Amino acid sequence: MQLSIVIPLFNEQESLLELNKTILEIVLSMKIEFEIIYVDDGSTDNSWDIIKNLSKNSSNLIGIKFLRNFGKSQALYAGFEAAHGEVVITMDADLQDDPNEIPSLFNKIDKENFDLVSGWKKKRFDSIIFKNFPSKIFNWAARKTSGINLNDFNCGIKAYKKAVIKEIKLTGGMHRYIPVLAKNAGFKNISEKIVKHHPRKHGKTKYGADRFIKGFLDLITLWFIHKFGKRPMHFFGLIGTFMLMIGFFFSLFLGIEKLFIETSGRLITERPEFYIALATMIIGSQFFLAGFLGEIILRNKKIEKQYIISEKLINE
Image (cartoon, rainbow, N blue to C red; front, side, top):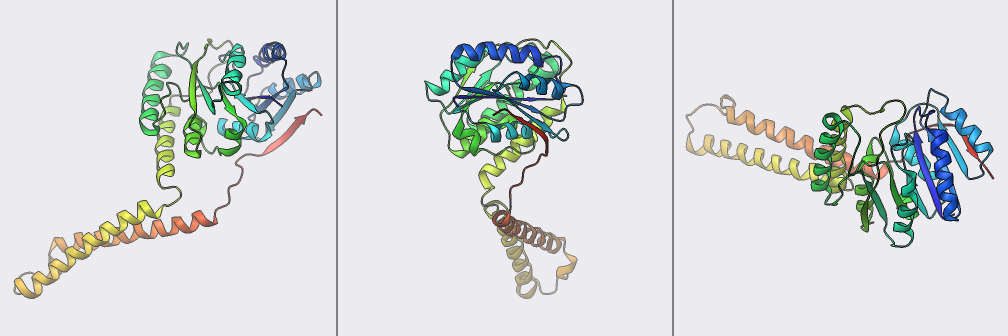
């Protein structure tokens, strides 16, 4: 299998027939072995019925239906798990991503040997205030934090080597940061390609302005996990030890001062410095304990899938 096309979707019944027809026309002209994997993320319209009908006429189509809406990250993860192609391309089902980009993205991976190629919607047809401007800020923060020089981290159309998608694990809303996850896993040959972006033909976007807030929080989480995810004691333990030492030496100073310098002065318990030292030692102990517990949890954790498949179509 040379190419897998993974398409997560949620309530896109108006777009599926046109999308599938265009993809087939393009990929069949490439004369390669391919599969199209539709992942229905709990749609409440007729999207799944359309996928089932399409599968009857195509041996290259795989359908996966979630029991409910679990999110785009889990839909992509399920598609990655099912993919067999040496090159994997992802794209959205709303017809805003152009299927004509598939051959060039495929060649970027297959011929030019990139690990990952991310699309860049340089000219967008989205709201300037609610999408374009927040997206620029979001991508700037992602570049600065990750060190990856991409202009559009969240572009739906991307191409990957099979080894990349089999290595990374998607949780929460981490689909926005697949290039960062790939880099953290050791895949550094990452590039981008300017792709066409089309206005939405049907329905309305499934994402609100809150996705950027969630995206920034996920970015902080990803940075922290990359730095300290394997050794939480290096973060919590260091802070805890530092605070414990400050509190201890502060308390020692107060004790020496009371015993040998100002013996007739106020009681230690009457001085605010005592309570500052005590609070510092307590908080330091809690940080140290958090790091210790984090190490124990990390060594005993079991990664579980965060989605449930209710139905699956596989043509043999």
